[in-house]
Length: 617
Image (tube, rainbow, N blue to C red; front, side, top):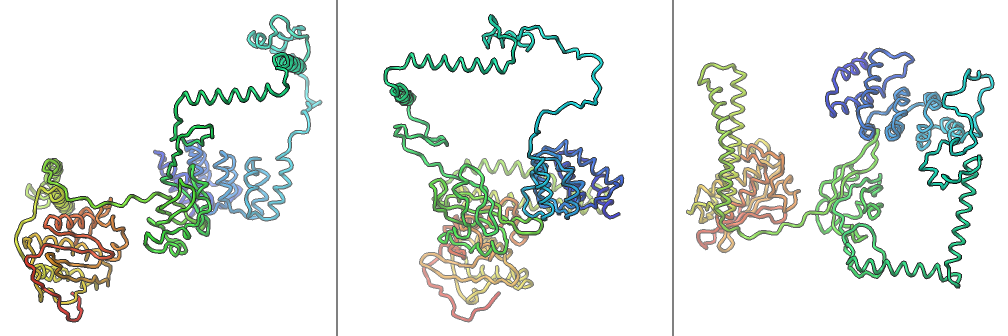
């Protein structure tokens, strides 16, 4: 009953679209493939087979083969295998590959399989000896041609009257063979048809006569030298081809086809491969690749080709643990089209619970980002962005107002469920509006349309207050910041307004604290270096794994922690903090696994660090 219930549940879903039809096909194959093969089918089982046949007529063969190629439970139902073996070659091949039958089931099923399916089955290497022997015995008949013409049954009765299409011979071959005027003209038979004999004998005689006429014509036109005619004709043809090639101009050097050495001096252009899909074997060697550059990477050992100069973790250990490979760097030395640095993204493949290798893509790494010069003020760009944000704020404000009216019951009582939904919508709108404010601020700062307020404040005091405010988040999780001394015991005066410094320090440290793992402490130091005050803080482990150029990029779909007060993710928050530091005359940049924040100092006075013991806040 458990099986029938699941099958009935699948059959109740109508295949209304292509996606649902493919999902239902996969589910039916998975359920029916593990069903016991009984002599009599229940109504639900019969309906399942009927639905599977109907889906097979709707779904293309390539898609059905792809669905069978995906990891499924082993197919142990001979009835389902016999049904799929009669489908297209791709579908039958994938079904036979996924089948796991016992000896008795194979011996019973194989004689009923089509000849093509038995030929596919012979390529499996895991069949029992009895099954292989049966395939060999049947293969004698599968691969043989009929020994002679099929004789009619002498016991069958003769027809009562001749067929209507039968005509008595007239002696004219053209009429007897039912040839059209075009065919007669082509064979030069219109004026003088051949005698009434078989067409094959006439064709042989005519071919021999044409060959003899051709030999006489060549002998008549050939000069005295027996071999100079053929060689001279070849030389003349090569010379004519060369002249015609020169008249057409230089060849297209961007073509993929190889060029013959025919005297053209155009320099060859090596086209670099940009992306190659591949699969590996159990040992991490490329066993299959896609595209015209596949032969250049077949047999490549991914672990042995790791680029040590690019840094990063050793992904050979990750491959041994069957972990995904993310942006792993390798270097290939080989054909010019594939030589150089590559980036590997791959995942492990499993079939029936067994590891079979990796599949993924090789792609060229992106060019390193070059630090751009400070942008010149562009008020026009800021104005255009301000107009876009204004158009986005208007509907968000309207939705927020309507949600607050329902939540506060300003126009009358409302159910509690509606009030709860309205409160959630109002909160989401407030979060969206806050993100618009951050985006507006970033655009204005990067275009120079909005400078930071001038003033002065003590950066050490702001730093101490920020760390204390973050205790509510860090202490329950056992994380925080490790300081060399009490920041309130020193003085770090900077030439930036206190409100701007508080906003910048909170944005930076809240984003870092929100990214720490439980029990993770970040080392924090500060110093005065000439006219600048510098704060250095260690990156959390989750951010230290990112590339240096990708740390300040906004990742699509990434949502920041509530502590970071950002809706565009940690990368956007750090980029906004870097823009604020740049607008204040400082800099926020990454050095190894630490972030360095520099701000202009108010005076050149040395406010050296304390040498007291290390403690955590």
